[in-house]
Length: 131
Image (cartoon, rainbow, N blue to C red; front, side, top):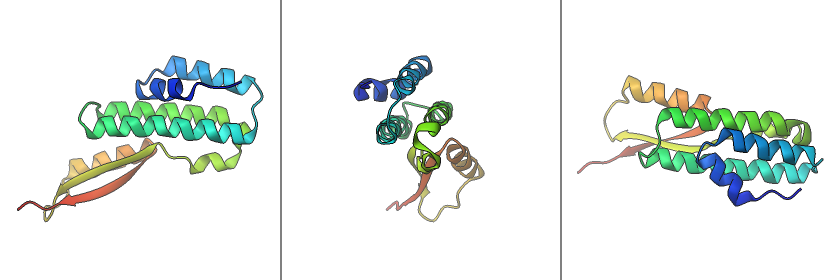
């Protein structure tokens, strides 16, 4: 079965869990190869990275990151029998969190970083210099 990768990315970006599950279940039922499973996992990762970008733009909230992380975990669970243990290497994406250079990170920023990491995202810390 050939998956419409653009549609899958769009479903993940829009957090359309029901449609994602339908697409992945149909894919798994088609008895795909390991390489096909890895390709689908990479596409799903691209979708969650788009969620991260929307968060960084202020269009999505932490709760949306958590939903995206949960969706990716569900997808990983469904694809694990096809891909094997290598599936653990797939992350939800990357998020940049930052504060002004010289400021001490606030407790809220630290908690947010932990929450985002629990959702499967890699956190990149940034310090911006203010003139």
